[in-house]
Image (cartoon, rainbow, N blue to C red; front, side):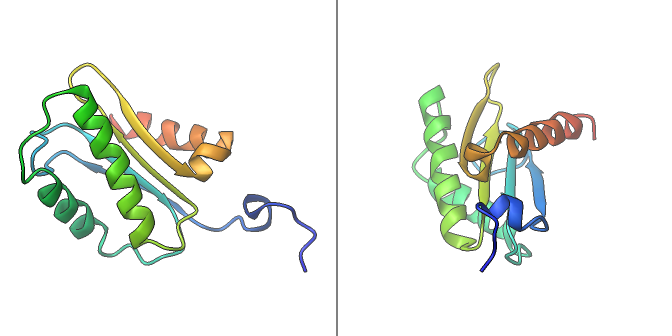
Length: 127
């Protein structure tokens, strides 16, 4: 039995991966960042995200800020179901002069995870 009280202290090797999408079906080039802290194999991440967006927006494109909020939350929940070992899931997007984020797990519970997430997203704007 470990003398550690939380997963983040006792397990320091689950990688944080962030992927930027600018070509998701239905979003017209809006930047979407998907972040995962997981030990799962994420080789199919692009296919999962693209497939979800295509199905989600089959009824029509988002037109309100609430539509983007709903999409971010739904994608976060979907990825948490697909990647069962995920310790953190984040979806961050930037529709017309706004920012929307949906955070789950370590991103909600640990300040340092959020700091690393937003630092990396800020860096990725320049890549």
